[in-house]
Length: 246
Image (cartoon, rainbow, N blue to C red; front, side, top):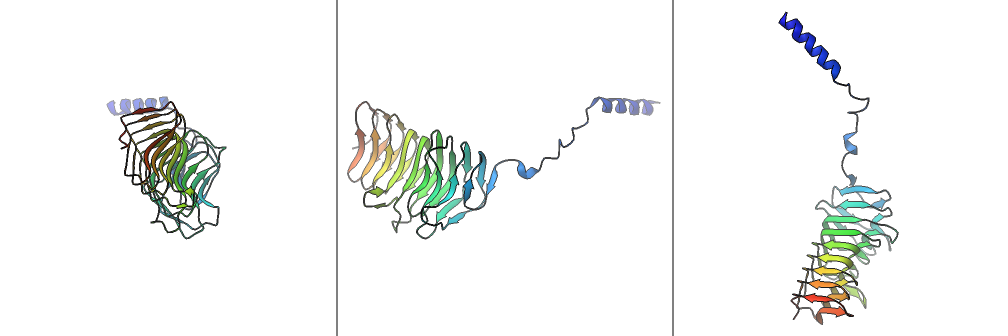
């Protein structure tokens, strides 16, 4: 009798538990998480994207490896490297002025010919945790990172220049913090007006270590060994505090 009663109780409990809706467990696991990037391409839809292998870019003149045409795109390089190939391959990652809210993080970019490693034309961008490097000056004449928004924790080295063009490690307006730039042909860091420039290091750049348009908050930066000027404040109204720039 106890067994019959227990069986009846289990049946009754099962009746109280709603059956799963059709398709509740039918989600394709490949649709979960970021969209995989396996090759150079145009990203035309908002969302999260993740590099899954190293890329080598051998594009035509004026071309871009990852061209972003949508707003609110996040690209995680996931520790991988995008390498520019032989000339005339140009920019590695770019977004136009009509985009908003682009994030690029966590990986390496090297040996592109002209243009930028990361050039984001829109507002509210985030560029963080990148290592951007030239190839010792054999033809590179671009810039490392260009963005408006938050640029933090990046290392940029050996951006060469052609005449007066290029050779800028980081060109940004917004919050520029915790970056390291060295051995760039012109500016280590070039900050636009109204920026917060805190805790960056610029050393051994061939022209200016850190150049800032005022008014801006310029605090706790280190700029040493730059060939012409270590710290250059252009205009008036900058808060110049605790900077090491002999």
